[in-house]
Image 1 (cartoon, one colour):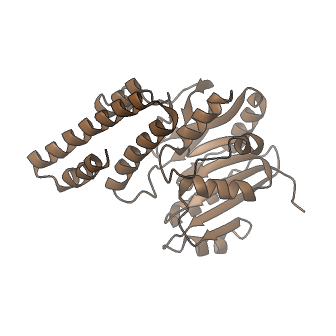
Image 2 (tube, helix red, strand yellow):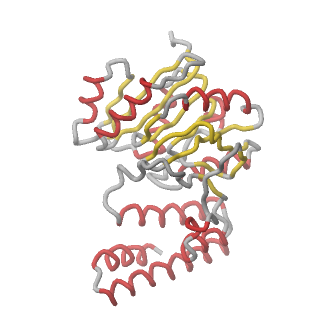
Image 3 (cartoon, rainbow, N blue to C red):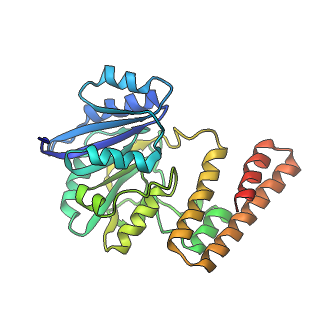
Length: 292
């Protein structure tokens, strides 16, 4: 029979052994004090000994070692099915929990859960400066700002609120929700391997009438892109994510305009690579051009 648990903390690990151990260390150093909890870890076919290290250091963790890399969405869906908690907290392995943050995030969610289905904490860079980690859905003007206007820099495409705020989406590095709300949406779309998963999930949540918010009193350090392989793959996954999201949620005209913007961005990056003799730019944006 399943044990009754208030909060299940779900952590995915992929070749981030040291960061995963640090994440677990900070969870157990600063656990939630307002209910029972469990920690589940899925090792996504790491080759750095992550699974063995977690098993040795934290035998209390419910550890699952996959023989294949499930990716972010499918991995979290797997852990969500295994979780015993009525509330789920999805944490990246490159998160450090700060003192009191798990308690404050859980309390904030309990206060607002009737109107807010999903909530994120306030993410910080390693130097404790705010890390932009929420933003508006990627309508075409927002995509244009992200691609050509350095939208993140100006706070057009993502930002970091200082007070409780309803937003369109929050970073998948730290999301709390009820298991009921998660299951109602059937979790993440498993056809997305990495990038745009949380935006797709929270877009579907909003369409179903469920809001998303940020609780800035709950702060977490986030290292970011720890399990990404080099610099080329993340960019290509972002391209794939945009195209998939627009194919799924928008009309053909919007998809056509999106592809032309992505094409223009890729052409600019590839041309710059040619002019500068930069193999990284030529390789990355050459692949991106072929994609669109």
